Amino acid sequence: MKKLRRFFNLARVYKNYFLKSVSCSYYPIRIWIETSSRCNLKCRFCVNKNLSSDQRGDMDFNLYKKIIDEISGKVHDVNLFHRGEPLLNKDIVPMIAYASESGVKTRIHTNATLLDKELSKSIISAGLDLISFSFDGYTKEIYEKNRSGADFEESLTNIINFLKIKKQLKSKKPYTIIQVIQQMGKPSKSSAIKQRRVFLKNFKNLPLDKLVTRTPHNWGGLLKINGLDNKRKSDKKVVSCTFPWYSLTIFYDGRVFLCPQDFEGKICLGDIKKNRINEIFNGRIIRNLRKIFKSGIIGNTIPCRDCDRIARKTFMNIPLEYLGVFVKDHLRG
Image: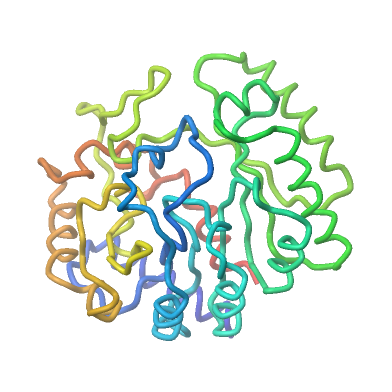
């Protein structure tokens, strides 16, 4: 019954996306909740290091509970991260537990530098559904070049210990992913395959579910690195962005934004301390954005204008990069 309901909700989102409906009568099925905008690293492919001190903070647990109380039974999952490192929030374990007890699936994306054995056990026991480790490099040289402030061996050990604890607890959850950023230019494809094979040996007989390689994206035009243009190529076909029809992003202070690519918070849709989520999801600003994407003319809408996410390969106008993954996420038991 639960899978059937999830399939129905997913089908409803796709229907509204295909029709480019301006008003949507449902809640978003995925929400990014920024548990912390602070980070302990200065990574090459991330613009967090450019945030000012007044843009850094942790979400208050009472505000978080207010969000979960509203979305319980309506939203499929929450990403408990956005611009920062979620493990910096002292309440991250009770946050996971509170959502899990409310029937909301939880996911975190972490650099693993703070993940000691005690925290690993607590996170698994709290009922986390998915964890992805951002580990940008198969070798010490590449990893530490990309992740300023991190130590290759320490981070790798933390992930291995996490997987050992997951195995000891005989827990199927959380679904565990390691995400590596694809290098621009070097190394060669054959060299990268060899590095990947050697790297995977670290997890032999451990419950690692998936290793994925991703290309860097430009964070709505904010990032330019290694020949990766920080502006969308104007001659590429514009894809109608999926975010306005299925998700919202809530900053640590309660302000609500359309998209996790809006790193600087250019398009504020409302404030969760003042408005309900379903009101914001059908408010004037987001309806106007849906009209813009329906027209196919982005114009000077920032950050959408420069975002490389609206120039991707698609199937039936849905970005191929996430189509299969997104469906599996929502239908996975």
